Image 1 (tube, one colour):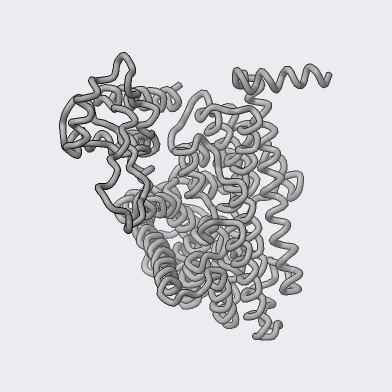
Image 2 (tube, helix red, strand yellow; image 1 turned 60 degrees about the horizontal axis):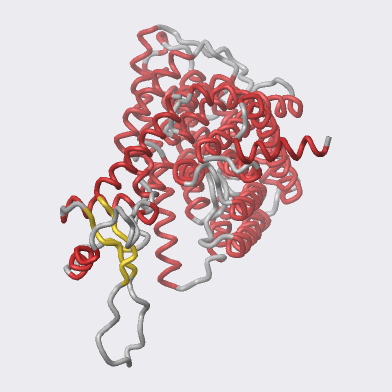
Length: 554
């Protein structure tokens, strides 16, 4: 038996998984991702009860019983722990979340950073358990990527297989987080892989089902938000109101994204100017959150209790507006302060509050034409989240599966479509892709842009002395004239140089080592290590694009 297992592993490494083997891997990864989501959620609840002595369901109502200094001390100490973890185990002191998974799916063959990913999961758990105002889904998505990366390394998976394994992990994690198997599968395609692949749909769906089973074994088949009322669309003449709500939701989503990015940039500039240690940044953010939590304890943690209350119309209009503004500030401080967590849950909270406020105004203007405020809260929840995530299809389905109410689909889809359309003009299609754009990673533009950015010319150049290499004197003369490419350059840079300088080929040089300024004499010439032909560069790009198209449409 052991020998047969060894033979099977060898076949997986050398020939890749067959269809049945891949489905089995998808099942195992889905179970692993579902368990990761489950234990992450239970860990947050346990840490929160230990820190505050109150569970998440009662924290908002009972936080006033705690001393004010305790509300400040808990997130401050949590921020200190987060800062020390990230400073020790990450190179840049930054939590890894969904944007990093998108980047790794596109540029790294579906492999995510494992050491940094585990540290980020620990930092996010501490953040959410000690008063941070963010979401649990983003860290779980990256943690699931760590699991799929481990499997991909064991079988020496190709980049295409690695991406599909990553899609399986993400679908299992999202499905387990929301008890939403359909949305989990579509989220992996729509947000992470950024295309819908027919041959990958079955294993990704298997993983989503596995993650859902894990959730239902732990929490039963109940939906995340059990609505007490009967939301319903009053008349079709009410649909223009939901179109307007979609536009308002896009503006709210853009405000949330810009607030987070501005807070991150401001804090980064402050720490660069002052020279303060980076581990101090989450601690200061925690202190600020603690101060805000004294009058507004609803900012603590994931915030699903606030979402549930908004969906059931438990707030007045003034409360809703204030709560929404404070939530934006708290999320910006949490994420801009380099604490842990994601943006999905905050978008749901803010969307429910936005929809409720809009519904209160709309129903007061035309009470006889309205189905009630609850439907507006549901539509707003989907519209803001879709605009932030850049995922209208999977977000709408998540709303349906989380509430168990599919009869309000017309209102939700109307608001989601308009919010997504407007938000795509205000942002780089989503919060995650905007983050990547600010890092100089242009995944949003498609494989024709990011593929040349990851391909190195060293594997494409012709070596000196090869039969198909140009004459050495021609190469030398070009190098002396300055028409060269540098060792390790990417294909996009090479193509732009061919466009600028023309010619059939360019020398590839290795610059000389820096020399002592005291040395006398002319500097050493650069070493010519090869030649890149324009036709070779174009052929390599065409082949890479063909493989990407085959992966998407196969």
